[in-house]
Amino acid sequence: MSGEKPVFLTGSLFRHIAVMSLTSSVGLIAIFAVDFIDMIFISMLGKAELAAAVGFAGAILFFTTSFGIGISIAAGALVSQAIGSGDQELLRRRAGTALVYGVVFGAIFAAMVWAYLTPLAQMMGASGETLTMSVLYLSIIVPSLPFLLIGMVGMALLRAFGDAKRAMWATIAGGVVNAVLDPILIFGLNMELAGAAWASVAARMTIAFVALYPIFKYHSGIARPNLSDLRLDLMPIMAIAIPAILTQMATPVGQAFVTRSMAAFGEGAVAGMAITARITPLAFGVLFALSGTIGPIIGQNFGAGQHDRVRQAFKEGVLFTLIYVILATVALYFLRAPIAELFQADGVARSLVYLFCGPLALAFFFNGVIFVGNASFNNLGHPFYSTWINWGRNTLGTIPLVYLGGLWYGPAGVLVGAAFGGILFAAITWFLALKVMAQQEDIKPADKGFQRHARLMSLFHNRR
Image 1 (cartoon, rainbow, N blue to C red):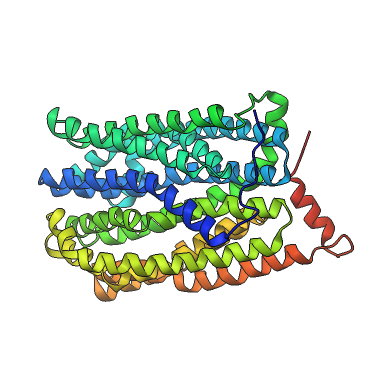
Image 2: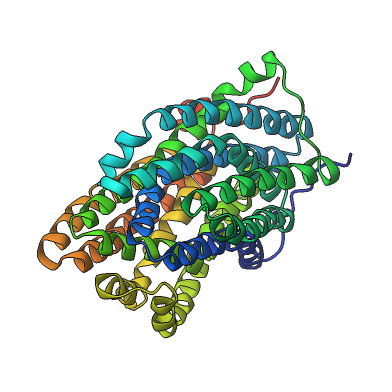
C-alpha cells in the first residue's frame, strides 16, 4: 500500500480546520440527532420519570464515553505524529496496539461500571421508579463499550490520515441504524426505554465496523501487534491516554454535580436539563468535532517541525470557534419555542430550555477555547495540562458556581453557574497554550531543559 501523505503541512489552516470540523461534525451530529430523537420519542410516552431516567443515565454514560475519548486521543495523536515524520511502520504498529489496548481496557472499565450501576445512579440522585429505569437503560448499553472503543479509535485513525469524510460515514451509519430501530423497538415492540437502549447498542456495533473497514481498504491498515509491540507501545500510548482519560473524566464529574444539584428541584428540572443536554451536542457538534480534528493538524505540523503553523492552527481554531458559537446562538434563539414544543416541555423544564437557547449559549465559546487548547497540549507533549485545565473547569469552575446559583436562583441558577464557570479556565488555557508553543520553538540542545524535553518526547517518537 502507498504511504500516508501528511496533508496538513501545506495550505490554508483555517480551511483545513473548517473542512475537517464541518465534515466530521456531520457524522457526530447524526449521532447526536438520534439521541435528540430518542428524547422526543421518550417524551411522547408521557412519563416524566422516563425522561428523568435518561438524564441520570446520561451523566453516567459520560464516564464510559470519556474513557473511549481518552484512548482515541492517544491513537490519533501518536499516529498523526508518525505520519508527519514519514514513518509508515511506526504508524501501522501504533494503530494496532492502540486498538488492542482500547478494547481490553474498555472491557475492563465497562465491567467495573456495570457492577455498580445502582449505586452510581443513586449517587446522581435517582430514586424510586426513575432509579429502576436508569439502571435498566444502563445495564443494556454499558456492556457495548468495547464496540464503541473500536469505532472511536477507528475514527480517530481516519482523522489522523486526513480522511474526515469516511470517519463521518461511520457515525452516519450508526445514526441511521439507531434512527430506524428506535420507533420499531420503542413503539412497535412496546419496549419503551429498553428499546432505545438496544437501538444504541446496534448503532455502536455498526460504527465499529464502518470505521475499521476503510482503514484496511484505503489506507495503510493496522499491523497485527505481538507481545513485543504491545510492551514497546504501552508507555507512549499511556503517556497520552492516561492524562487524556483523566481529562475527559472531569466533565462527567462536573456534570454529575450539576445533575445532583438539579435533582433537588424535582423531576421536571432534571427533565429540562436532560433536554438541554441533548440540544447542546446537536447545536455545538461542530465544536465537538473540532476538538478531535484540530489535533491531527497540530500533530502533523509538530511532527514536521513547522512550529509557525502549529501556533497559527491554534489561533485559527479559536477564531473558528468564535464565529460558529455566534451563529449557533442566533439559531437557537429563534428556535427556542419550537424546541420546547417538540419536547412538550412545560413549567420549569420549558423555562430551562428558553434560558439555554438565549444568550446563555454564547458561553459555550469558552468551552470551545478549552477544546482547542486541550488538543494542542495532547499533541505537543503536555497532556497533563489538559488534565489540570479540565479538572479545574469541572470542579473549581463548576461546583461553587452551581451551588450558589442553585441556592440563590433555583434551577436557572444551576444552569447559569455551569455555563459561566469556563471563563477563567478558557483564559488560563489560552495562556498555557501560547507558552507551550513558545517553549517548543525555543528548545535547543544547549538549553538547560533540553534533556527533560528529550526524555518526554521519546515517549511519543519511540521506535523499534
